[in-house]
Length: 262
Length: 304
Ligand SMILES: Nc1ncnc2c1ncn2[C@@H]1O[C@H](COP(=O)(O)OP(=O)(O)OP(=O)(O)O)[C@@H](O)[C@H]1O
Ligand SMILES: [Mg+2]
Image (cartoon, rainbow over all chains, first blue to last red; front, side, top):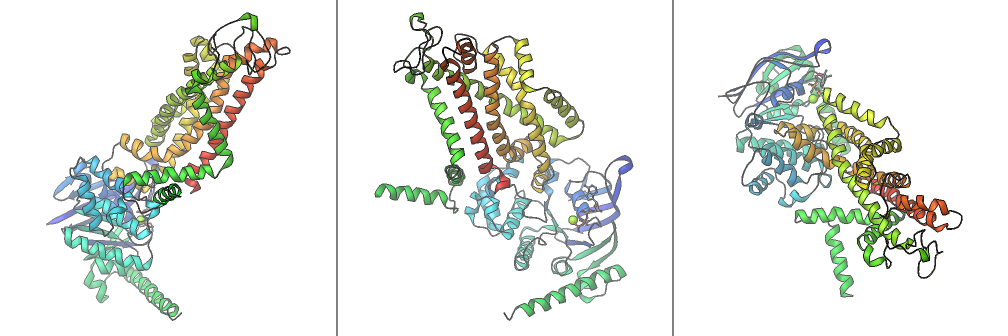
């Protein structure tokens, strides 16, 4: 069963003369439980696609179907709760003057949910945070802990889809793996569908079943994980991306091990 | 010994970040603010004077041992003495007692203006900033019109049009004080308008009212509170100015500005009639300024 269907999706910013079409006619389907990756150079429109799916960018054309329901430009509350966005920067995505408990309570209030404290405790446990963190303010948390809070906030409305916009790129390398494993666990446990934006092909290969390679607002190729791992991608642009990423990864390995003996 | 033990336990409990309840988290931030107020002598002096003003106003009938309204021409214009600490005025009323009761008038005007102006200024400014577009244009042009007059002139015009009296003075002053607050609220709102946490709330279905009240208010509150505190001194000065010109509080009500005005005729013979209320106005408005500056250091999120 397909969870997301985008057909001839085009997204633009600005009005009239200044209108700028940033995403040009992309079509894709994501199955339930699948993780679909989006990679491509900076500014190619990855976040814009996520924004259109999340309901943030309202200037899109084409058809969007989420969980079997066709979506319009205006969404109902329950349509908004179907998918949630996890932002790149955990320092800017949590209200600095709300306690963690308050941050998690907010969506429950908006949607008039019951058993609120119980849900907050469950979601904190799910993302691996101690329960008394709910009384803390974000500035009392580390980056990785904040990103867990951001994931908890996204999960508390029990969405079917998480839209992950570079969820680990603002984090320390050692924390990145933790968050990725958490996301992997959650996907299995809650049967979530992910769309994951990342610059790091290693991250993509770790988590994604299929990957769309983007260039200036369009897909150049949709590759499977198999193709990435076996290096049998077809499009030359994908090769360039992969080579760049590989060079970077092995460089980093080298410098890491060089730094180790000390 | 036991007593200091409990105090240090309380201190440890308040300072600890291992919160076990929402109440502890709240008390923690209040306690930290209190500690930083103590660490700033000038701000603390301002706070002490303001606190004293509130206490004096609340306990006026107890503190003032003469009736502020009883006239006795036999003792008119007496110099300060042990009976009449600040002397008597041209009707033989005790200046000290009138000063004490005048604190009530001053506080009444300041608080009322602030309570009226804070929500109006915030709602207008934050709505303009958050919604943008033509709402922003309309609301800000209205604000500009009010801003383009010198505030004392505007207050004077309004209170002359509305007629003398303390309620009208409050309305007139409020009309001149809200535009800068609206400006500030708009500017603050614009800086948070596109923050990820606001977008996150929108994507969870939060409406405009909820975003403004739950998300924008806590962020704007510190700078608005600071601005309001700093404004209190100009409210006091404007109120005194209106009283001085006979447009604010009406006799026999005790009001510092009006007291200074009526003493003007006897400036050479009875210096205390203008000097004492003048010093009171100066002290209190200075105290609000110091407190406001201190609060800015304590509360502004950009300072930590
Ligand atoms: N609010 C906006 N108004 C106008 N143009 C925008 C806006 N947001 C993004 N753009 C433009 O749209 C294009 C795509 O932006 P987008 O944020 O989707 O890129 P991205 O692929 O996510 O890049 P990155 O990897 O750097 O995050 C960019 O050229 C950007 O300049
Ligand atoms: Mg992006």
